[in-house]
Image (cartoon, rainbow, N blue to C red; front, side, top):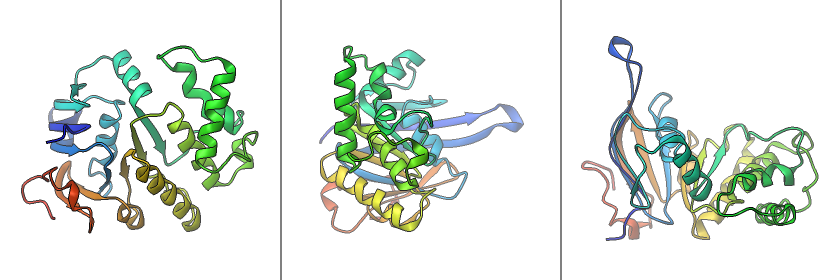
Length: 248
């Protein structure tokens, strides 16, 4: 059996203590193969973003294990987690998080300043950023600042920034949440293209159209996985057995 790129075992996350404790995650067992596209859905407060933050090494679980490429990263320190994020994971958020005073190409190049695999020259960072912007269809917007771009274009810049370090995994938290339907569809088409090119994607969404393009849909409720289903023809991922009682 192929080793999952992402695996959680009994993952929990609790905020606070005693009577005011909030149990955001309650024993999450999840396995995701390299190259798979998984949508995580559920009502507000179900633990979706908490889970994504842990998968992205932005937070640590209270208990349980998180294996990333077979390495247990559950108890790593901040610096070690930052190194893993920089090398392996790209992030896309609902609010874009672009710096308003920088151009598109400057925003995309920012993560390369923290690349730990070796220093890149200014020219190398520029060329890598241009390459990423070309990949999302914005090669004609290199010098535009965020306020000169539409919402959809800003999200494309954010995706290019997530891709510039050539990560193996892309995590997206409600990437179409601030967009109109047309712009949202363009972003979903882009995510589908990235997946077709072999990238592992994990998408948190409330949008049924977004979850419909994923291979697999994981439903969270009250911090637990209540179903784990495969979309239509994607049965070749069936070796990643969903939790007991999952929909198939």
